[in-house]
Amino acid sequence: MKTALLTASALLALATAPAVAQDQLKIGMTFQELNNPYFVSMQEALNEAAASIGAEVIVTDAGHDVAKQISDVEDMLQQNIDILLLNPTDSAGIESAVHAAKAAGVIVVAVDANANGPVDTFVGSKNRDAGYMSCKYLAESLNGEGEVAILDGIPVVPILERVEGCEAALAEAPGITLVDTQNGRQDRSVALGVVENMIQSHPDLAGIFSVNDGGAMGALAAIQGSGRDIKLTSVDGAPEAVKAIADGTPFVETTAQFPRDQVRVGLAMALAQKWGARVVPAQVPIDVRVVDSENAADFSW
Image 1 (cartoon, rainbow, N blue to C red):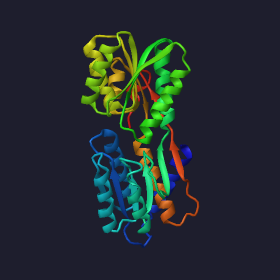
Image 2: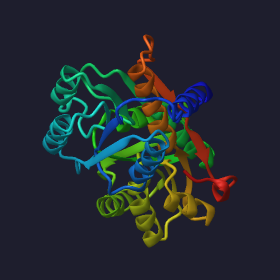
Image 3: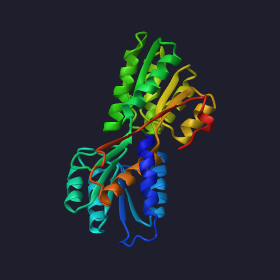
Image 4: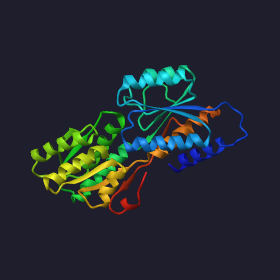
């Protein structure tokens, strides 16, 4: 991670040189959604980085609609973007847009979730590690014994990897039993109802892992409403989740990602190729970090 961040810093510093006479770079970024603090912070970091090199930024919100995201990319290509930063809402469904961008000579970097097709670089969190770390923490917080459940989400690669990592960690704790997996769609209101049903169906439920903090906040409301002693862990590091952990609620841990770093490194990889680098990493994994009561007060994206 440190190497990637140093690369990003060096590239962006070089780009600020005022003597470089060239047309203004045009960067397009399409998000799977912007109704999420995680992606909002990513957009903020992109705008800051682009401003530092005098680049124009075009941002779109797919709202988890792959047809809209494809249309948004087509519109960006009509506006002659140089770089496409792609946060796909559907890794397979967006492939045609990736091919169209490459046919137009655009550099394509996938951020946070990878996309099918000829993507130049993928920059994303170590999602399997994140799921593993959160569920290992959950098992340890239960002293290695008890029934737990997984609050799943939309089946994109990062979410699938988190669940895979979680299941691997739980399998290492023979006294832990996974009794339920249900889809909360990473949405607070949906997760609230799902977890209420989980709690009613499993009177001995002792722990829940949520694949993201949005779903976890709904799960927390359900746990608090039940009056039961159920520990909750998650992935993301969202401000609201971090505050809940710091406040000593049943939400005991989130494995934090670094959305600002992801987009900075993604832009750096695109700039490296734009400026003629012949060897650019196919993937740049970004580390994750456990946030619990020990460090929550000092953590932010």
